[in-house]
Image (cartoon, rainbow, N blue to C red; front, top):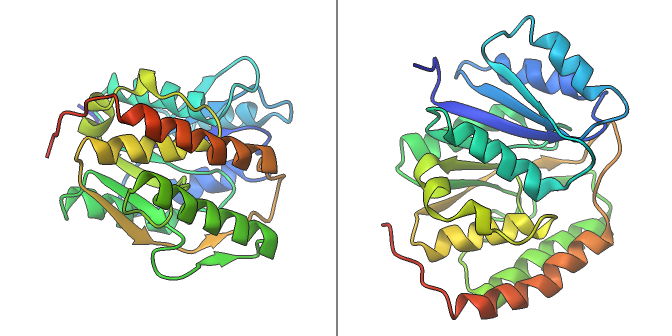
Length: 247
Protein backbone atom coordinates (compact mmCIF):
# COMPACT_ATOMS: atom_id res chain seq x y z
CA UNK A 1 0.00 0.00 0.00
CA UNK A 2 1.47 3.36 -1.05
CA UNK A 3 1.78 6.16 1.49
CA UNK A 4 0.33 8.62 -1.05
CA UNK A 5 -2.16 8.52 -3.90
CA UNK A 6 -0.19 10.98 -6.05
CA UNK A 7 2.97 10.99 -8.15
CA UNK A 8 4.60 13.88 -9.99
CA UNK A 9 6.38 12.96 -13.24
CA UNK A 10 9.22 15.33 -14.18
CA UNK A 11 11.13 14.82 -17.46
CA UNK A 12 14.69 16.17 -17.32
CA UNK A 13 17.49 17.02 -19.67
CA UNK A 14 20.36 19.12 -18.26
CA UNK A 15 18.55 20.41 -15.17
CA UNK A 16 21.58 20.36 -12.87
CA UNK A 17 20.82 23.82 -11.46
CA UNK A 18 17.18 23.07 -10.66
CA UNK A 19 16.66 19.40 -9.91
CA UNK A 20 17.55 19.26 -6.21
CA UNK A 21 15.63 22.44 -5.45
CA UNK A 22 12.45 21.31 -7.21
CA UNK A 23 12.54 17.90 -5.50
CA UNK A 24 12.95 19.43 -2.05
CA UNK A 25 10.21 21.98 -2.75
CA UNK A 26 7.72 19.24 -3.65
CA UNK A 27 8.65 17.07 -0.68
CA UNK A 28 8.29 20.13 1.56
CA UNK A 29 4.56 20.47 0.84
CA UNK A 30 1.97 19.50 3.45
CA UNK A 31 0.28 17.24 0.91
CA UNK A 32 2.50 14.22 0.28
CA UNK A 33 3.58 13.45 -3.27
CA UNK A 34 5.95 10.92 -4.74
CA UNK A 35 8.25 11.98 -7.59
CA UNK A 36 9.35 10.13 -10.73
CA UNK A 37 12.19 11.67 -12.74
CA UNK A 38 12.53 10.63 -16.39
CA UNK A 39 16.06 11.62 -17.40
CA UNK A 40 17.22 11.44 -21.02
CA UNK A 41 20.94 10.86 -20.37
CA UNK A 42 21.64 14.43 -19.24
CA UNK A 43 25.37 15.01 -19.77
CA UNK A 44 25.44 17.54 -16.90
CA UNK A 45 24.87 14.90 -14.22
CA UNK A 46 21.23 15.57 -13.42
CA UNK A 47 20.57 11.85 -12.86
CA UNK A 48 23.51 11.54 -10.49
CA UNK A 49 22.01 14.19 -8.21
CA UNK A 50 18.66 12.39 -8.21
CA UNK A 51 20.25 9.04 -7.39
CA UNK A 52 22.19 10.62 -4.54
CA UNK A 53 18.98 12.10 -3.16
CA UNK A 54 17.31 8.68 -3.31
CA UNK A 55 19.33 7.69 -0.25
CA UNK A 56 17.47 10.45 1.61
CA UNK A 57 14.04 9.85 0.05
CA UNK A 58 14.20 6.08 -0.19
CA UNK A 59 10.60 5.22 -0.99
CA UNK A 60 9.28 8.47 -2.47
CA UNK A 61 11.86 9.49 -5.11
CA UNK A 62 12.20 7.38 -8.26
CA UNK A 63 14.14 7.72 -11.50
CA UNK A 64 14.09 6.15 -14.94
CA UNK A 65 17.18 6.81 -17.07
CA UNK A 66 16.76 6.60 -20.83
CA UNK A 67 19.49 6.35 -23.43
CA UNK A 68 19.40 9.46 -25.56
CA UNK A 69 17.17 12.51 -25.85
CA UNK A 70 13.93 10.80 -26.83
CA UNK A 71 11.40 13.60 -26.48
CA UNK A 72 8.83 14.98 -24.06
CA UNK A 73 5.90 12.84 -25.15
CA UNK A 74 7.71 9.52 -24.87
CA UNK A 75 9.08 10.57 -21.47
CA UNK A 76 5.58 11.12 -20.13
CA UNK A 77 4.25 7.92 -21.71
CA UNK A 78 7.07 6.03 -19.98
CA UNK A 79 6.18 7.71 -16.71
CA UNK A 80 2.46 7.06 -17.11
CA UNK A 81 3.04 3.35 -17.64
CA UNK A 82 5.31 3.18 -14.60
CA UNK A 83 2.71 4.95 -12.43
CA UNK A 84 -0.20 2.85 -13.73
CA UNK A 85 1.71 -0.32 -12.83
CA UNK A 86 1.45 0.91 -9.24
CA UNK A 87 -1.47 2.19 -7.17
CA UNK A 88 -1.30 5.93 -7.80
CA UNK A 89 -4.71 7.51 -8.34
CA UNK A 90 -3.50 10.99 -9.40
CA UNK A 91 -0.67 11.39 -11.89
CA UNK A 92 0.91 14.79 -12.53
CA UNK A 93 3.01 16.36 -15.27
CA UNK A 94 5.42 19.10 -14.20
CA UNK A 95 8.56 20.88 -15.42
CA UNK A 96 11.80 20.86 -13.44
CA UNK A 97 12.68 24.54 -13.86
CA UNK A 98 10.20 26.20 -11.44
CA UNK A 99 8.12 27.63 -14.29
CA UNK A 100 5.45 25.55 -12.56
CA UNK A 101 5.10 26.51 -8.90
CA UNK A 102 5.19 23.45 -6.61
CA UNK A 103 2.72 25.24 -4.31
CA UNK A 104 0.09 24.83 -7.04
CA UNK A 105 0.29 21.02 -6.94
CA UNK A 106 -2.25 20.73 -4.08
CA UNK A 107 -4.64 23.02 -5.98
CA UNK A 108 -4.54 20.72 -9.01
CA UNK A 109 -4.94 17.72 -6.73
CA UNK A 110 -7.98 19.22 -5.00
CA UNK A 111 -9.57 20.04 -8.37
CA UNK A 112 -9.64 16.31 -9.10
CA UNK A 113 -9.73 14.55 -5.73
CA UNK A 114 -12.23 16.90 -4.04
CA UNK A 115 -14.08 18.67 -6.85
CA UNK A 116 -14.52 15.55 -8.96
CA UNK A 117 -12.72 16.51 -12.18
CA UNK A 118 -10.79 13.97 -14.23
CA UNK A 119 -8.17 16.34 -15.67
CA UNK A 120 -6.97 19.53 -13.99
CA UNK A 121 -4.86 21.91 -16.08
CA UNK A 122 -2.60 24.54 -14.56
CA UNK A 123 -3.71 27.25 -16.98
CA UNK A 124 -1.80 30.40 -17.95
CA UNK A 125 -4.66 31.85 -19.98
CA UNK A 126 -7.97 31.00 -18.28
CA UNK A 127 -7.93 34.30 -16.34
CA UNK A 128 -5.99 36.60 -18.68
CA UNK A 129 -2.31 36.12 -19.52
CA UNK A 130 -0.43 34.98 -16.42
CA UNK A 131 3.13 34.68 -17.73
CA UNK A 132 6.16 36.31 -16.10
CA UNK A 133 9.55 37.08 -17.70
CA UNK A 134 8.82 35.61 -21.12
CA UNK A 135 9.83 37.61 -24.20
CA UNK A 136 6.73 39.17 -25.74
CA UNK A 137 7.18 37.21 -28.97
CA UNK A 138 7.07 33.92 -27.10
CA UNK A 139 4.04 34.99 -25.06
CA UNK A 140 2.16 35.87 -28.24
CA UNK A 141 3.23 32.66 -29.96
CA UNK A 142 2.06 30.50 -27.06
CA UNK A 143 -1.18 32.43 -26.51
CA UNK A 144 -2.26 32.40 -30.13
CA UNK A 145 -1.18 28.78 -30.58
CA UNK A 146 -3.69 27.86 -27.87
CA UNK A 147 -6.35 30.01 -29.52
CA UNK A 148 -5.65 28.30 -32.84
CA UNK A 149 -5.93 24.84 -31.31
CA UNK A 150 -9.19 25.76 -29.61
CA UNK A 151 -10.57 27.04 -32.93
CA UNK A 152 -9.54 23.98 -34.96
CA UNK A 153 -10.43 21.28 -32.44
CA UNK A 154 -13.39 22.85 -30.67
CA UNK A 155 -12.14 21.87 -27.22
CA UNK A 156 -13.25 24.38 -24.54
CA UNK A 157 -9.75 24.86 -23.11
CA UNK A 158 -7.91 28.19 -23.01
CA UNK A 159 -4.40 26.80 -22.42
CA UNK A 160 -4.22 23.82 -24.75
CA UNK A 161 -0.42 23.64 -24.67
CA UNK A 162 -0.07 23.67 -20.86
CA UNK A 163 2.29 21.12 -19.35
CA UNK A 164 1.29 21.42 -15.67
CA UNK A 165 -1.41 18.80 -15.27
CA UNK A 166 -3.14 16.35 -12.95
CA UNK A 167 -4.75 13.26 -14.47
CA UNK A 168 -7.08 10.94 -12.67
CA UNK A 169 -5.80 7.41 -13.16
CA UNK A 170 -8.89 6.27 -15.09
CA UNK A 171 -8.20 8.78 -17.87
CA UNK A 172 -4.78 7.36 -18.66
CA UNK A 173 -6.11 3.80 -18.43
CA UNK A 174 -8.86 4.56 -20.94
CA UNK A 175 -7.62 6.91 -23.68
CA UNK A 176 -4.99 4.59 -25.15
CA UNK A 177 -1.68 6.28 -24.37
CA UNK A 178 0.16 3.90 -26.72
CA UNK A 179 -1.77 5.44 -29.61
CA UNK A 180 -0.78 9.05 -28.87
CA UNK A 181 1.03 10.14 -32.03
CA UNK A 182 2.84 13.35 -31.14
CA UNK A 183 6.14 13.13 -29.29
CA UNK A 184 7.07 16.80 -28.91
CA UNK A 185 5.22 19.95 -27.94
CA UNK A 186 1.95 18.84 -29.59
CA UNK A 187 1.83 15.85 -27.25
CA UNK A 188 0.19 18.10 -24.66
CA UNK A 189 -2.50 19.13 -27.12
CA UNK A 190 -3.27 15.59 -28.26
CA UNK A 191 -3.60 14.36 -24.68
CA UNK A 192 -6.12 17.07 -23.81
CA UNK A 193 -8.03 16.61 -27.06
CA UNK A 194 -8.31 12.85 -26.55
CA UNK A 195 -9.37 13.25 -22.92
CA UNK A 196 -12.05 15.71 -24.01
CA UNK A 197 -13.30 13.46 -26.81
CA UNK A 198 -13.78 10.60 -24.35
CA UNK A 199 -16.09 12.81 -22.32
CA UNK A 200 -13.97 13.23 -19.22
CA UNK A 201 -14.51 16.24 -16.98
CA UNK A 202 -11.80 18.89 -17.47
CA UNK A 203 -11.11 22.04 -15.45
CA UNK A 204 -8.55 24.81 -15.84
CA UNK A 205 -6.98 26.04 -12.61
CA UNK A 206 -5.40 29.50 -12.99
CA UNK A 207 -1.64 29.55 -12.32
CA UNK A 208 1.17 32.01 -12.87
CA UNK A 209 3.87 30.70 -15.22
CA UNK A 210 7.33 32.09 -14.44
CA UNK A 211 10.11 31.72 -17.00
CA UNK A 212 13.08 29.71 -15.79
CA UNK A 213 15.88 31.54 -14.00
CA UNK A 214 18.44 28.74 -14.26
CA UNK A 215 19.30 26.38 -17.09
CA UNK A 216 18.38 26.53 -20.77
CA UNK A 217 14.93 26.40 -22.30
CA UNK A 218 14.18 23.44 -24.60
CA UNK A 219 11.53 25.39 -26.57
CA UNK A 220 11.99 26.48 -30.18
CA UNK A 221 9.86 27.55 -33.14
CA UNK A 222 10.08 24.15 -34.84
CA UNK A 223 8.31 22.62 -31.84
CA UNK A 224 5.47 25.09 -32.31
CA UNK A 225 5.41 24.23 -36.01
CA UNK A 226 4.74 20.58 -35.19
CA UNK A 227 1.78 21.66 -33.12
CA UNK A 228 0.33 24.09 -35.67
CA UNK A 229 0.37 21.75 -38.67
CA UNK A 230 -0.24 18.50 -36.81
CA UNK A 231 -3.47 19.70 -35.23
CA UNK A 232 -5.36 19.74 -38.54
CA UNK A 233 -4.36 16.14 -39.22
CA UNK A 234 -5.36 15.14 -35.68
CA UNK A 235 -8.77 16.78 -36.05
CA UNK A 236 -9.48 15.12 -39.41
CA UNK A 237 -8.48 11.69 -38.08
CA UNK A 238 -10.82 12.16 -35.13
CA UNK A 239 -13.79 12.21 -37.54
CA UNK A 240 -13.14 8.54 -38.30
CA UNK A 241 -12.51 7.38 -34.74
CA UNK A 242 -14.97 6.36 -32.03
CA UNK A 243 -14.59 7.71 -28.51
CA UNK A 244 -16.76 5.77 -26.04
CA UNK A 245 -18.12 8.24 -23.49
CA UNK A 246 -16.91 7.57 -19.98
CA UNK A 247 -18.81 10.32 -18.14
